[in-house]
Amino acid sequence: MSTSNNNSKSKTHGLWALTNRELKKWYKAPVVFVLTLIQPVLWLGLLGNALNISSLFSASSIQFPAELAAQFTPAQLSALGSFFSGLQNQIMGSTFGTTSYISFMAVGMMAFTALFTTMFSGMSVVWDRRLGFLNKVLSTPVSRAVIILSKVLSATLRSMFQAAVILLIALPLGFAFGAAFTPLNILGVFAMLFLVCLGLSSLFIAINIRSTRIETPMAVMNLLNLPLTFASSAFFPIKQMPAWLQAVANVNPISYTIDGMRQLLIFDSIDFAQLAVDFAFVGAFAAVLTTIGIVFSWRFLNK
Amino acid sequence: MSEDVIKAEGLTKIFNHNLVAVDHVNFSVKQGEIFGFLGPNGAGKTTTINMLITVLKPTEGRASILGYDIAKQNNDVRNAIGVVPQEYTADEDLTGYENILLCADLYGIPREVSKKRADELLALVELTAFKDKKVQTYSGGMRRRLELACGLVNRPKVLFLDEPTLGLDVQTRAATWNYVRMLKKEFGMTLFLTTHYLEEADALCDRIAIIDHGKIVVVGTPDELKESLGGDIITLSIKQDVDITGLVKKIERVKEVKKENGMYVVKSESGEVTAPLIIEALRKEGHVVTKLSLTKPTLNEVYLQYTGKSMRDAADESRESAFAQRAMMRRSHM
Image (cartoon, rainbow over all chains, first blue to last red; front, side, top):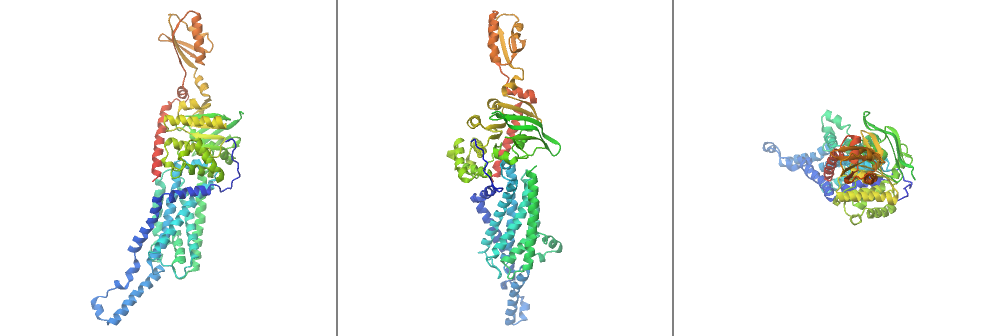
């Protein structure tokens, strides 16, 4: 034990070790892992079916009042019936961009889950600080940037995985890809998710690294959660919202993420101009928040 | 070799521009020494250690470890030192073996080297039989040993131990002391430790610094510190009813002689050497010593003298914080 270690190390050594340590906590704990898989099933199964908006317009739910029906011949009635039931696809298509509400919602759920997972994963840094692990790592030659990046990366990877699970679960529940879908679009979807998770987790880690109590990030999360989720197009299209809510939803990066993902997954034709705007907005959001997050965390670690 | 392995000059840490945690501290630690940092809670022990291990930046002053400046060459410092923190930092969900590999990764040690080293270290701290068990099944003593093994993974020249025996039972504490002594003896390691236990500092440390209110109040070997209080106390009585004060005062090293309740109380350095001299001198004069006792001042008295506080109060506080910490670790597991 007399020789010291002076092996030349890359600037990023320890990045995978620290990231993997975070991920292991999750995938090596069977209960936690199974629960994280069950949760989206419940969401999609319960909310997706309870709010099954497309069924509102089905032919069977259209009953003509007797006095009205008497004025038409049976042939006219059946023509009217099929007209109204045809309205279903028309209204769904023009409102949600797809005839299947579960497809619409599943994409919203993917973004929503990514948001949730980044928030929760970021909380581990509070424990690392309280339990002395952070100080221990700070006394090793791991670079400060690597410490922050490992947190961001593990939260991002975990969120992306969760989002992928949602998509897989939505398939047997009736998820329908749009006509414009090609397997290549999946790459675009994950690029989108990667960007938004990167920005969000950087922000949360900058907040959490300063908290000595787990209650602080909890409060911040609860505050941000609701507006980020419901002032977005996750469950309902923005154009159906009142003007003031639209204003909020139009600057919400989650809306752009969801729109981008819907274009790539469920819409029958891709509006490339809008897709470019989506990517630009989410990309700028990620760049700004990652920079702010890393600078703030860095400052804290170098006090 | 007697060069200074750790050298602090005017080392100062001020938090939020007004809270002076460490106030112009100067000390040096020699190669192969076990140096103990003693002090009540909030005295600045942990802040000092955190500056030395490059977790905190000094506000003023400087310190170097093996000649590397802790602020300017912090990466060299980090490669050369090992840290055994006060807390149990090992990951409960990982096995002992995996934890050591994780620590090795933080030093950029290649896998083929770190696997071999993990086995060596687990053998050293006698955890080989438990290497593939998750840390959550470990006892407190086993966790401490695992922390020690993690702290040694980069083969450090200087090892920092923050409260290494806090909350351990008597046997485990004794075992920890043996590890510390072994590290010094077998590997010539320099050890810097903070402790609340005075008997531990006394038994283990070559030199001790007592820190209070961010300032070092005294530095020295345990014996020097005890002697700085004026030496040992020899209490004796003689058969004859005569005054021997003058006679005893003439004996070498005797500083003070008082008569209290028919007993003579003699203050002297190195009492164990003085006591036989006193008996001999009195016998020559025909006096017969009937009772004699020798009391060496303990570090407790030294501590009390320099900080004005009893160590027990401070230890109680820290025990509470250790309990709180354990409760938190349980919560984190959910």
